View 1 (cartoon, rainbow, N blue to C red):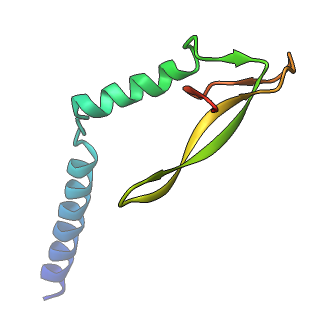
View 2: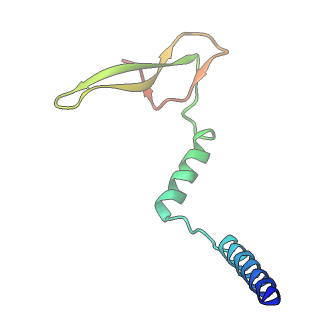
View 3: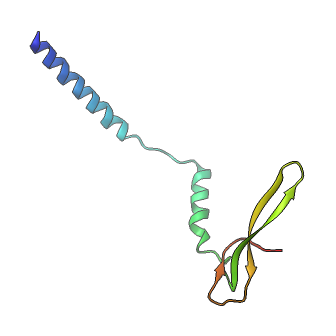
Length: 91
């Protein structure tokens, strides 16, 4: 009986190890949309949207039925050592 238990233990250990190894080999494929977002985020720092002499700021806009939302923007401050890369210029 003990020999059977040893064989069962070794077999169960081997099957758990094999299953863990099999699961670690799976490849996750990203969708085209995710890849496009990654490219857009990676390109954000290299874009010409950087504005020297501006600082990051924001303003609030009210959308009827949705309420207020905060929009990031760049506000001019005249400091040559500051910069902002938001898409919009603050109103």
